[in-house]
Image 1 (cartoon, rainbow, N blue to C red):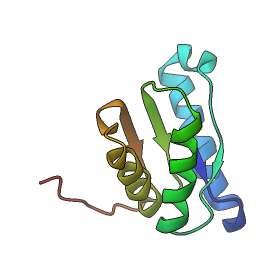
Image 2 (cartoon, one colour):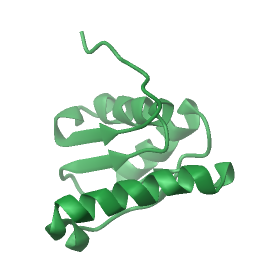
Image 3 (cartoon, helix red, strand yellow):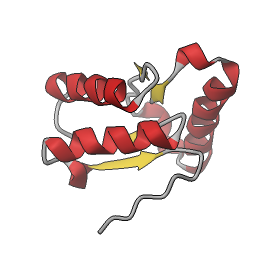
Length: 101
């Protein structure tokens, strides 16, 4: 989960809601390890946080839940940089659209 603690409780509720929804729809998700990362506020900082995570995390399929779409797009970019976009799915909020072409 890519969080933004400095933004307060509203954005914290987005992550909580995402986790609750996953557990409600996929009961087995409760046993899957979850990393909580601090996105620190802007796309460049998110890129660095995800790059660091990718350097130390084992290669596996990853779902990234983000507090907003700016963070989601930056996280996806970090996975693309290392050629791992096929093993990740990214979920954000705020309805920022990105043309995949």
